[in-house]
Image 1: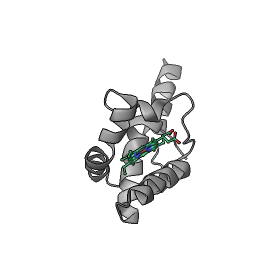
Image 2: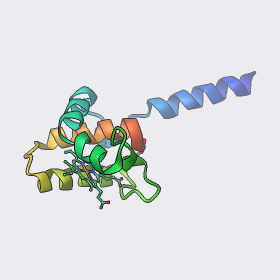
Image 3: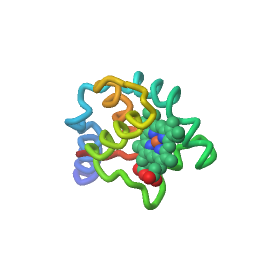
Image 4: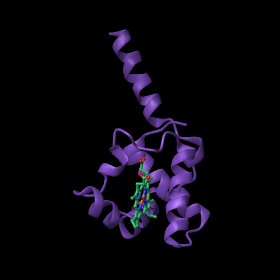
Length: 103
Ligand code: HEC
């Protein structure tokens, strides 16, 4: 019983561990930004809701910082002129939904 309790507690700790890079990010803002600006293109090349691009076996992004860099690169290409905090919000949202990096 004690072991089970400890395991549950550990799971909780891991889940509630806030990624340092994303600790000030606003997930709701990130979600809105991604849905508005990013999903349709990913969906047109990958089908479905476009989220397959984040789950590809050969996906490019391998860390939180890598994710931020990729979001920034996409934005620069698209000339969307997001602010740094918007890039962070969008990255944090993608991390929470798909990548789940802890660092
Ligand atoms: C005009 C089409 C298009 C738009 C718009 C677009 N992307 Fe992408 N995105 C791509 C393509 C194509 C790739 C795959 C690039 C590759 O494989 O080298 C990609 C890859 C990515 C990846 C990496 C996926 C992986 O492999 O882990 C992320 C993260 C990403 N995009 C985020 C965004 C975000 C955030 C936005 C909105 C600001 C956005 N993209 C808008 C076309 C687009």
